Length: 146
Image 1 (spheres, rainbow, N blue to C red):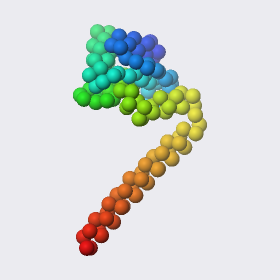
Image 2 (cartoon, rainbow, N blue to C red; image 1 turned 60 degrees about the vertical axis):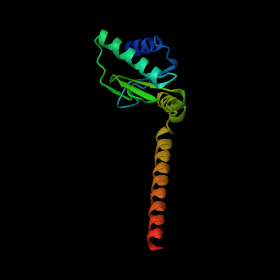
Image 3 (cartoon, rainbow, N blue to C red; image 1 turned 90 degrees about the horizontal axis):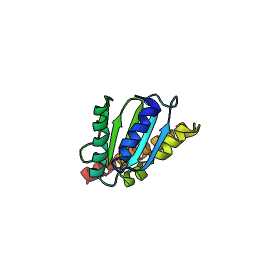
Image 4 (cartoon, one colour; image 1 turned 90 degrees about the vertical axis):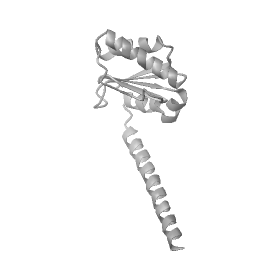
C-alpha cells in the first residue's frame, strides 16, 4: 500500500484516535524526499503519542513498514516517515509556530517565490545568529579588558 491509498489509511487511523485539523498535501514531483505530507493535531503530548502508536500498530497489522519515527518520547511534534508519505502529528501551538501548512501549501501549489522566501528567511536567521555570536564575543572581550 502506498500513495493516496496509504494517505487515506493514515488519516483514518489518526482520526480513530481523535486527531483534529487533518490536512494532507500532494507534493508528488515537487520535493525529492516524499510525495505526500499529512498533518494532524493532538491536544497534548500524550494524545500525540496515542495517535502515533495507533498508526504504528495499524501499520504492523497491515504489514506497512514505518521507515522512521521521531519525537515519540515527550515531544510536541511526532514525525512518522513512510518514504512516500510523511505524517506530522503536532500540538496546535507547535503547528502554528512552525507554519508547516503554509510551507506545504505553497509547495503543493507551485509557488515560484517559495525558494526565494526560504532563502531570505535562512539568510536572515543566519545573520541574526552571527550578529548575536559577534555581540557575545565583543562583550566577552570588553569584560576581559576591564
